[in-house]
Each structure stands twice: as C-alpha cells, then as structure tokens.
Length: 463
Image (cartoon, rainbow, N blue to C red):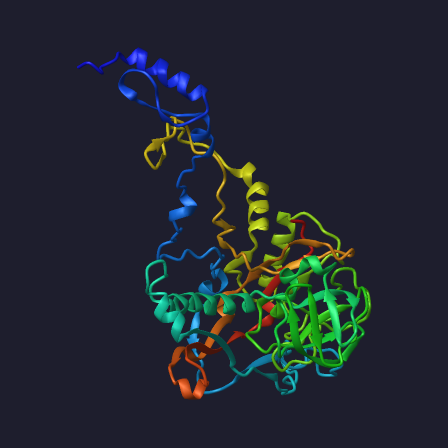
C-alpha cells in the first residue's frame, strides 16, 4: 500500500513528535498518532485501593494463651452432701505435761494402763464458688456478620470464645498468687500492686472483685475489693490502707481457692516485707501456724531475694511432704522454671544410640543428624507440668522475679463441682430493653485441699 512505512521510520516519526510536547496526528506518511510528553506526565492508573476491599474470611484465630494445665491436672469430683470435712489433728497426749506418759506408751509387767484420752478433731469447710462468663451481640450485628466480609454466625463465634474464656478464668483463679507488695497508696482506698503501673495485668489479675484482703501488720482488717484496674495496676478495696513495702494479701476468695493460698503459712516474709503479720487465711481457718495441720508443708520464701532453682530446694520440698505423711505426685511451675530445671538436669542426659535422625517440616527435610536438647517429663518419678498462669514472686525492690514452683500431693486435692458448667441463652428483647442476644456460662465449684500440710511451694526464684 502507498501509505505503508517501515517500522523503523514510524518509530523515528513518533520520537520526533513526542519531542514536540503534544499528542495528535503526526505529519508524514501514514498520518500515524504520536505521544507527547504531557500524555506520559499526566496519566494515572487504577490501583488496589481504588477497587479492592480487604476481606478476612470467616475463620477467627485466637491470639491468646488458652492453656489450662492445672485445672486439667486436678481431679474433678461431685460436691457431695456436705460443705466441709474433718481433720484429726492430735493423737492425744504424748507425754508432755502428762504424769501418766500419754495414752500410748510401754506398760511394765504389773504397771497401770495408759490413761484414756481423745484425739483432737477440727472441722474445715468452704462453700461453693460461682464463676460466670457472659457475652452478647446485637441483632443487627448478628444479621450483618452473615454478609460477605463478615465472620458468619457472630453469636456462635462469641459463644465459642466465651466458653474458652470461662475455663481459662477458672485456671487463672486456681493459679492466682495470694500476696503481693504494695508500692504506693493512691488514696481513695486504692493501692498500686507491684513496682509500677507497668506491671498492669501481670499482678492485679490475682485480685478479683469480691475478694477480702488485708495488709501486713493489720491482719484484723478485712477489706473487700471493689475494683481492679488492669491498665495501671490499681486495686481498690473498702477501708484498705497500704503503704510502700507492705503486703496486700488474700484473706478469702470470691472465686476458687488457689493453690498458692493453700501453700502459705503465717509470718511468711514476702518481697522483703518484714512487718509482723499473719498471711493468708483459707477456708474457715483463722490461723496458719507453720508446722501444724493448718499450714502447708512449707512455703519456701527467701525474704524477697531472688535465687536460682536448685535440686536441693526441690528435694527439701519432697522430703518435707513425705515427713508429714504425704507422697508428692505432681510438680507445677511456670515455663521459665521448667526451662531452668531442664538446664539444671541437662548433665544427666546420656546418649546411647547415636543414629542419623531426619525431621520433616512441610515439604522440607533436615540434614541427617542426631536429637539434641533435654526434655524433662518427671523428676524422681514426679510428673512436671508447666502452666503459663503460674504466680510469680516479687523482690525487695518490687521487681518481678520468676514463677513459683508447687510440689503437690494430689491425693488430697480435688475440684469439687456443685453445678457443672451450664449454658444459658436469652433472646428476650423486652427484658433486655434492647435488640440484643445474650449468653452466659456458669459453673459452681471449689478447690478443696483435704490436707494442707502435704502441699509445698518454692518462691523467690529467679526468672
């Protein structure tokens, strides 16, 4: 054709045309179009943000630690027909202050029989505690969540999450610490727990609304916790007076009695608080004299000075429990002490069969090698379980130390259940005076320590 031009000539014309800074018909053969500088300078493109809206899918992944180790490990029993149990706390006179030598003694050939006396019995009781978890969604939220981009059944998602939270709450109560230092009196019956507001939920989570607490040197005062502020570490309670360095401790729980409550006795020095005081009542007991039925087998504190975990500390706890007639069956501690114990006993590891070992990860495989690292399952035949909710200790400077370690005879520990977990749902808009759907989980139970003197705690450990 007459207007046909070569590609090279056309590109040359286009280049000359763009240099002119315009867009339009090019002169010359073919009357082709050319692109000027303004065209390239002013053009825009559709981008992701112009037409695309991010959607996240219906699956909701829980980014929270929901492990409930201690709760899973302790046996569950029916509540039964009573609220308490009896302990025999004395065999009768054993000679001290007795002219006859006690009711159990050797008798000579013609000697008199021992004087008859009675054992001492003490009643211990605790009422069931109610743990409640509630949730709700609006009717509009429930409807809209089913549309594209929603999470599907919003109520069902919240229901599942709340059921996990309910069990987690029980575990947190079970592992709550019983005594922590006050660092500041903020007035209005409020104190700061721990060194500063930065401790936040890490420490105040051990105190619950409805708990009764007292302070060291002021054990007759039973203040009721009215609010707990996780943002700044504040605990408010009626008639609560606390100064820097004094201990705020639990006298009675609104919720489940904790293992830490069980493993305490009188006049323990926590975090360097040297004031004379009685620490931690439990159940209906008003004294926790060390070495008696009312005290734990031991609360091994170090006056708020951190120390390394050692086999000597653990062996002492095991020996003390056995001395009181128990047999340790479970060790519970935090993840930090679990790792410390692993490293402490690493030297005992022995390699017998050394073989090539390959592990698959996805579509990849490791190089041939051997297993390394020491994974501790038991110590002297006692299972060890790490629980992320384990209570910590505080130093004399209000600094956080590591988690505690508990050596337990679980034959005498039980979760007594009055009402198994029940689920209640309400869709009565008139009763709620709002277009909402509500749900609730409720459990009524209590942790019973049938013998306190065969439980042991090691505290003031380094992290």
